[in-house]
Image (cartoon, rainbow, N blue to C red; front, side, top):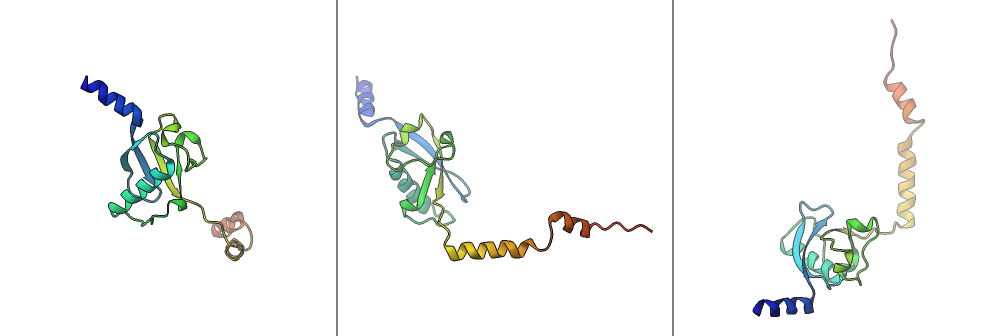
Amino acid sequence: MLLNKQKKNQNAKGNRLLITINVLGSAGPIRFVVNENELVAAVIETALKSYAREGRLPVLGSDIGAFLLYCPHRATDALSPWESIGSQGGARNFMLCRKPQPMKVKEADEAAETLNRNKGSGSWKAWFNKSIKISSH
């Protein structure tokens, strides 16, 4: 009878999932238990707090709006912060990444200039032919 009450309480709250979140640039994953009805934004917040509490590097900060959570089953699309973590069809492994920062016009011009400067004269074939001169005696 006690077991039935526990199952009913669990179903009322939703199932709990042990999830693994890999943080790009970190040495190992973070694991914690969440409710399957938990929003992705709350999961990101919990992951950032756990990451900071463990003193991991690189330091990520606590701005949940600066991060995206990816699921390997959804290809390259990041999860919406407003969907539940359990809506991923039983997925338990996720990847936490910083949102890409848009490049400013000045930075883009500098990057293009650097690329042109490094290009040099000629292609890699010309460089290769200059490097491997075979002399005949």
